[in-house]
Length: 114
Image 1 (cartoon, rainbow, N blue to C red):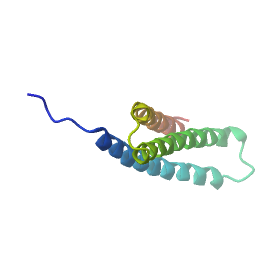
Image 2: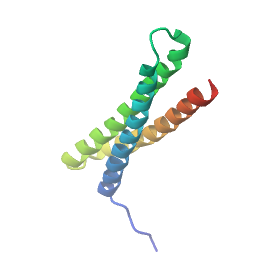
Image 3: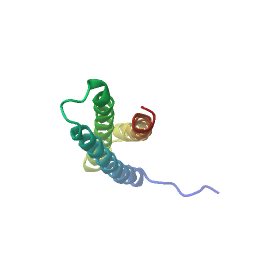
């Protein structure tokens, strides 16, 4: 007996929602890093603020991947479910999950071990 089949539309809707939520989550942490960076005055050595600048770039790239997944999901839904785009959306979502994890690792390493 075969189990229930999940329709592509349901998967894309779930990816759209999860990607938007992760984008918001990443944006909050990007805001914290930007506020931390701005809290240093101009007399701080470059080696102090460089890790925050790097982390900001990593978080911004991660935010971009999240928004790209939202955009592609929306494109798929509006476009009537193009088969070629479905696999791309799932692949982007997997890349997004990896990017969020890498961002968390880099942020933790930057804040706790440097």
